[in-house]
Length: 458
Image (cartoon, rainbow, N blue to C red):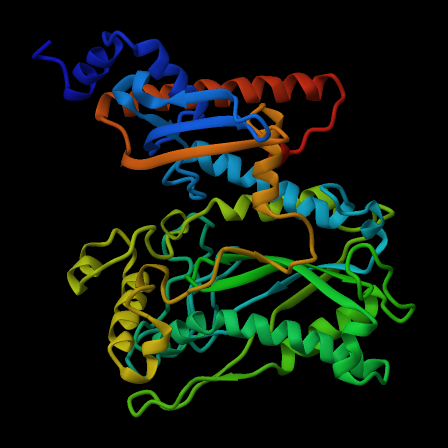
């Protein structure tokens, strides 16, 4: 035993515990969660009228006198089992807003709907994948003496892709401040689209909510140059939301025109700084707005939902654009496993975060995400269902929902989180087994002719 690695010794110790079978049931119930939360306490369910105890659960008889529950982390690099569950919820959340379901009427499929992409502007020339990177007949060099051209054909996996041709020419300050104001840019963009739609039909802007409602679900994605761009599903409804038909003038073409015009002219200015000045922040010139048609022409609704769901599980570390954990000192940035381009962005966040005029942006707190402070996925209230509703529906499906006419008395406290080395090894094996079972089941459904969408299996 002493010659075995610590992980193996710990796994053998756990397997020899008297309550190993029950512990295994708990870990299996979490899907093999990589970083479970451990709780201690009890729940008592009583009849609301008579006070009779209908059910009582206490962790006193559980292994270690605790109950393990999922960590619910969305990042695949942190917990693959929980991220898979989160991706599945996202798929159904986005899909319901496209074709109905989850208390959303099926008529939304016939509304004006777009799948749009808004990019960040250029902050400097970077290496590109595909054909010749940046060919120039005359070559040439920048003011720092570096070549301003690149005749190589980079593969998509080339580490040079996304890296600046000249780091000294690259505007790292604008990049960070654009990230920090990306949420404001999106909010102004939504307002601008509403105003453009109202103006296009000679409608007073303040009365737009009386005629139509703009609903959306958006996801942020880091590009190879470590800049965020936005994918979003945008839908036009009547004033009451998904239960109401839009006005006759509300067409996909008019909505597309409003999206493109607003993205071109939108402008957000940063507070003036003696060190930086005042920057004018805009969306990039590349704006894509593709209609989603009920007749199946163009983009497929399920493919769009799967595409959005795929990106919510990616953390900053997974894309190489930052880290999944916050940094607390300048030395943490030096030790981060990132490219020099990303490290410079993190250092820029730290430096700008020390300036009083940028204090509200909390740039040092968000240095690990390169200044980006928004949620990965956000949606408008009327777009579709919510994560909370989907989780409640899943709890009801497995029989954990509240019983009518009862009162629940619960007392719980946090007692720890994570696994020991041996427990982590066993949990990883459980997660792999469950993933393989899902794959086999999906293959069987596909052979049987059933629908098979990647995100729907999560």
